Length: 493
Image (cartoon, rainbow, N blue to C red; front, top):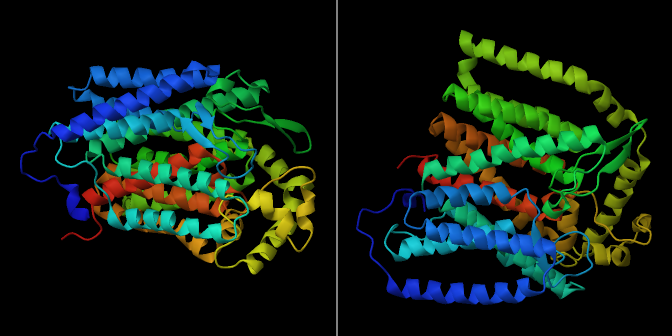
């Protein structure tokens, strides 16, 4: 659907039936919100009232061109903030334990309402626009995962995870439908602000050796780690230190690309600041997996953004200075890095290989459709034929390998369906990047490298599925790639 990148020239018409449908939907939403907030906790009240405040503000500004900008920036800014409330909660570890209504979800609901309103009044001729290859991969994922119900022990957990996937796909489609490159760039700007903010919070947590009292926004207690001496791993407002590291490993390639690309100096300096702060942030997580991805992802971005410019004197000097800065940072960080990799950590490293073998024993029994989406933690000990799952004494957990986890739950067809959006998005990003102007090229190259970094990290960690925030980050970035690829297709027609 690459032709959808340019809007048709015919004048848009008002659609009264859509306006009436929107009024009815708003009435229904208001009724449900009143019922939920009436007996809610403080966290639920803050999330709900923030969502209502956003709605009131956008309704007040609905005739202004600023609505779309404020909406896009606001949604992107909420992605790493775990301000939410949960419905139909289950005692569960791994994927979705409930239907989670976060600020991001409320913002996306508002997005569709605003876009439908703009379509209804004729402000835009199309409601949504999609990049077909990426969208089809997402639809296949939604279609294939219910097949795991065949062997699922708990169908409710399957339904909860599938509903989360549906929300993620809708978020991807929303970002694809921006249709205005200015809004796509604004999405990245908002995320760069969060990179700086999360890095600052992480540095404060790491330096003060305590949390900052931001629990209502998703801050969790710091995680102690013995690396020869006890240190505290930072969490930001995203959650576990490993999840915070996912955020940085995905966003740092984008920040580096935008810091190196040709654009006004003030923008390059801003993204350079975000990149430097992000390096500090990822250090405070003490995540070895994310550290190992950086040389690969950052090298890819450097080559794709700089390309032949490296032979120019000015570009070569700039690259040399960047390299020197990274070497200085590595010098000061080396003692911590060396301790993290060399100190004995049996609880983490020594347990992963046996658990991987235990997960493989389940895959051998159910290779086609798996044991049920989101059912791994509940079924691990039941189906494990090696006995290694007994490492988890008196509690449940998932295997520290994204691929084995998905494979055991959804079988071979499910694993392929999960990987398809990643592989297709990375391919689309890197094929479209050479034909795009400097800034979109940097965004496309950076997102492709960031997604690849997360796939690499998934070899030793559960990955994005343990975090709704990171799931939204990944799927909305897929939407960014789709939006830019529509504007700058790999092959011009």
